[in-house]
Length: 612
Image (cartoon, rainbow, N blue to C red):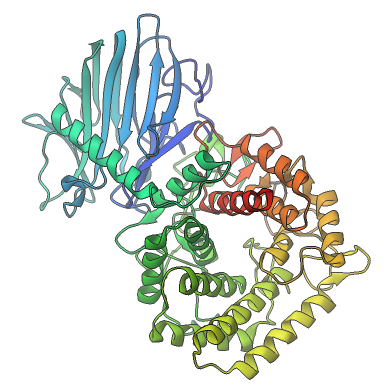
């Protein structure tokens, strides 16, 4: 649990809460970040990739926020209602204790209503007497669109040409021309409700009485607990694994089955730096790895939904010679994701530019073929057999990989420093062909197996011959170089090389020497391998969990368990991870990140199994 000294402030004299001082709520269509001070400072409506309603995490003045906190000197603590994505923020004052229960209804009649998107904040005084204050200050379209405010009966309407929101509450609100405020006091046992709904011509505004809020709360709790009961994990780190699973579920877009890389944009990989990207899209690689993690736990429904997304929205036709797949897609399957900057926003703690869209969508990254086909192979093995049409698509992808595996590309880390012959890209091309061969053999499916085997073996020899550096005594980032890369940790995990092979153990030792810092793993050294961007970055958390798994498979269980336990100390107070960790242990980058949570699940499952 995290504490903050005063409501409305990150700390005395600071305008921003640290990235890690947030919890996440959502309804499988969008999410909100709720700070430990009770402020919602990130919320997009009606979908993950829609323009923001609240974005104070990117600009404390112009971004907009929804404050709800005790109006007194206070300590705060935050936790999830057990086994759910309902977030509780508690306020401890001299005269009493209050809490705010934040959630978006899921599994209720209201949540199922087309076009209805609702955010509920229920305030309860649990001991003594507590004064509260509320400020609802939307700044639509990333703070760029003006809105009007009008009061209609007991409903406050925030209206703009692109979006209209209705605020209802059972406490009196004061309004100016664009914001609504309230100051109120609750005695022990009293409660208040604030509900923010998207409304349009088809969805009329409606109130949210205390009894309705109670019903929605109970139904939402029942939904999350019912979903989590599907988990087969009974290992040592059940709480962390289940929190990661619940987080991955929050990053799924129910209407299409899409799985997001992260629900935020432009949270910096380095404070004050330019490495600020929009991750609110479906990365083929990230989503495919998520399918693997969820299948390991028994969640076949999410894998089936993602396979439907792949079949429906990812066409296997070639794109201007760049391959049949993009590296990322919109949550609705769209392919155009133009990147632009928002200069009117200062960025988190001054980290500019703020970007929406992602130009990396046009990159060539060959590794995605291995990630996707591996997930299809596992889905066929652990969930249900793929269809004949899906197999035809797999064959098309594998045939393309056989023709193009030896091209230089931008690589797994989306560098903007030019294409190279990255070893990881070769590795995952090998995975694509090898898994397809396995699938064809197990199911007796038609395939050009002679050609596939020949190309698979050629790729293997190429990696062993040109990816190995005698000088470093290790496999290296790209052919002809001597730079190390943490993506090489996937070599034994992908079953390309035995985890106790002398060449691999030598590589593992070299990676430990060069890229590991007290269990934390850097992706690569940007000074030794320029990536086209200024500044440094923190350690990359997925790589740290890959490192744990590589140690497990190498039989170094004591080292693996210590590294895993250390990694758990870098989670935030709720068990959530951003993509990177700074030198001082702070979370950096978009938050929370699917990549990190899926690798935590994989490392925990494999470490559990090895420990017995």
